[in-house]
Amino acid sequence: MSKIRIALIEDHDLTRVGIRTALLQREEIEVVGEAANATEGLRMLKKVQPDIAIIDIGLPDKDGIELTKELKSTSDGEDSPTKVLILTLRDHKEAVLAAFAAGADSYCMKDIKFDNLLEAVRVTYNGNAWIDPAIARIVLQQAQQNPRSAEGVLADQTNQTQNPDFGENQEFIDSYTLTERELEVLQLIVEGCSNAVIAERLYITVGTVKTHVRNILNKLCADDRTQAAVRALRSGLVG
Image 1: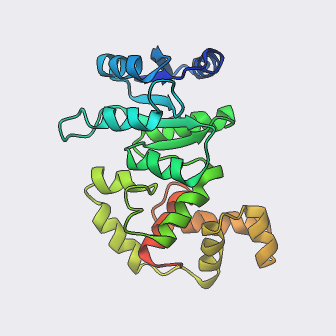
Image 2 (image 1 turned 135 degrees about the horizontal axis):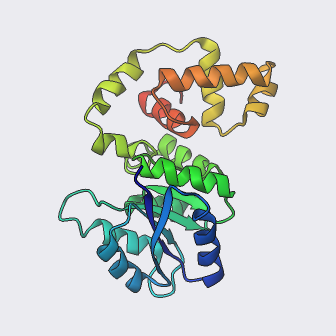
């Protein structure tokens, strides 16, 4: 089994060491490079070409968004072999949307739990976007307000550019009818509600909610709740 090759670009030494130490607890992960600023980071990324670059948004010489843009623009029109996972304390709308517009593949908050960081790494490595639940609502709101401009930001953008079957999948989603209850659950997912809140709102058990969520993910061919919500919004299943 090939390892996931990761490079870290983070200016705070303790944070960088902590992330590296945490990642190396997993045998499937290999840290192949580190840098404390954007200039060294871009040079390092071009040299080692890792599978994933974990980039801090607040670098001292140039922010991580600009670094991401430069990295993605060095591929001569081809998809960059390195996927970018932005790690930051910023959760305001402008930073989130700017990161995805620059070509970031995933976006995590720095206070993310280790298990969730591992999940983000695996999802990103497999070619999908991972959006921290703390900021997923920002992306969904953007999709509702301006679906056209949000296309490059949404969690399933990778499927559009890399999956030749995306168009067929979209038609399948549009034509598949969810039950009335599943649509109610889906609407609450879009609003950012947890399973417990959905259960309370609809007067059903959490177990029943989980069953509905599982069915919704299957019907929408979605990997997670965020992707399901985004696809539902774009296909007009909910508003």
